[in-house]
Length: 151
Image 1: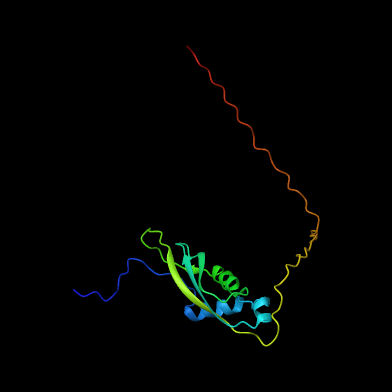
Image 2 (image 1 turned 180 degrees about the horizontal axis):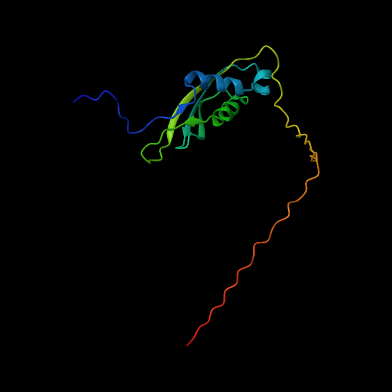
């Protein structure tokens, strides 16, 4: 009897949308460091990272770096990633994966990181259109019981 379906004991974590979406996510969130721009540094940072059983990146290690803030920026972006992990028969597995992040010098100076702006709070006042008349509640009739106990 041949099995058509492959059965895996441990399922690997997958980034939602696949490898193309992983690449899009990295380069959408990557900011070129100011120190690297001033020094004219370009190249690739190789990162190894660990994924826990919930799909969170819990640790990153630089296997081959560039310096000038590129290593730290690559680690920052990798730690933001979230993976889909199937249940592995109740076993909590720590997965290890590698990624390379390419730093290519932009034509213009990198924009400074966004500064957290205070949130403007808006208050709303609601007034009813017509006055609300409370309903009169009818009290239920009280029922009393008398018990006689003889000894």
